[in-house]
Image 1 (cartoon, helix red, strand yellow):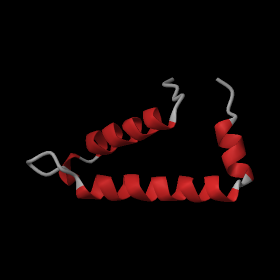
Image 2 (cartoon, one colour):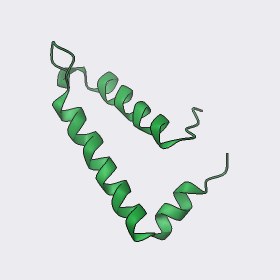
Image 3 (spheres, helix red, strand yellow):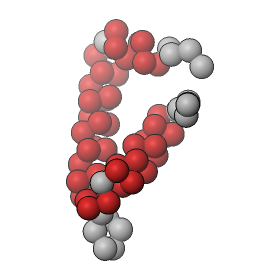
Image 4 (cartoon, one colour):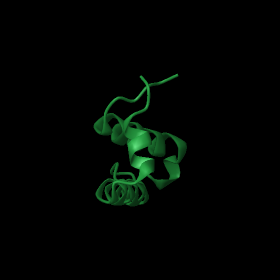
Length: 65
């Protein structure tokens, strides 16, 4: 099982997997607006959780390694 230790690793993992799972979203020049949209939405949701200090964020940031 692949373990993610940092937010940057999570972003890269999502970035790579969206492109692998949905090659039809990737344009011939390598850009992927749909992927970018998903990545931006995730960042917004995580930011909102962090700002509110919700229990979900505390659980996510304190996962055992």
